Image (cartoon, rainbow, N blue to C red; front, top):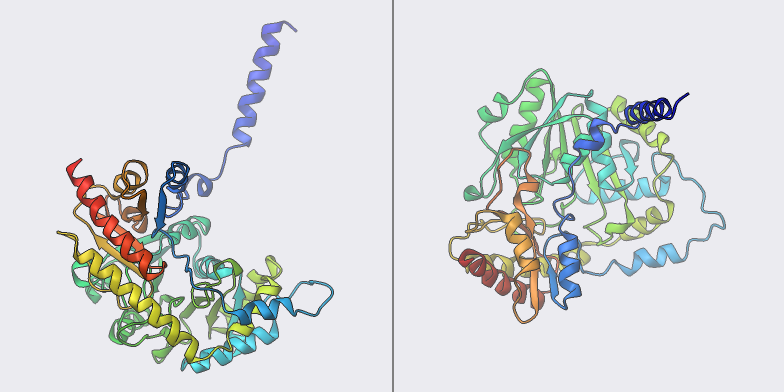
Length: 415
């Protein structure tokens, strides 16, 4: 065989292997996190000696309760063994007691412990949808819903909410107009990430009525249940008659400032759905054992714990809101819950603004990192003038950060 023949043969082999090694559509289409993808710009700023106030990510600075750590440290078993796929029995019982304290009649056998709230959402999408089917979502929404949808091979159907009315839900007619044969459910986060909106009982009841009338599931993300500053939180299980189609998604991450523990839960009274969720859990064996032990101890903390930390977050919320209102042209309705504000700023491109703040701007050797708005949308060209701000820093740091943000907006506009 001549040299040229061998070369052609080798080239053909490479081409054939290239076809074999092609990545899946899920792998190529999943979005990069808009919260994390600007981290290299922040790292470069820090290398230049710039202090970066991180308002881009919902990582609380409040200490994880000592009860969590004490329980982990005193774990007495000599072997860290697999736990039950549904969750440790003692933790399931503790969760049931916690939910009853919240006024929710949830039994241990209606809960599946998940590896973070993220797994609960992926499970829920996969439990109710075939590949290519759809879930209605209200935008702006928690950005990782996009990634979870890609992982489950489903599509999100975005419906617009607006900053001017506090990002509350559109009219029932607008929601129903988005329902077609491929839509299998509606997902809502209450209180909301990224907007801080607290949806009312009437809004949750309307969603339940739509789901009942059209044979859909309601996925209710209630991670920020305790983070309410004005008004009352409404769980999907506060609405009568939702037992067959309601799925509650939950996590200890923000509630007990334990984001790294990766302990969430999926709650449903639909027995077939619960049994299928347990089988999903069996496929990944179990959620972390030690973290469930710590979470069980944290669940025993009573109202005094939440009163203290909610008071702190309310003070932070007020500082951020006042800082935003000091920026001419900014639009933001005061958030009633969670620990985020989604603000419309007098800028044309929030991603370029975020890069500018990290690459070109500083004040007294300090700058601010925000999360650009487009990453919280599924619709193209939305959120270009919006940023999400997480008020997870102490009050002195937030006052300084908001003053720097105002100066940064002014400098960006002059540029």
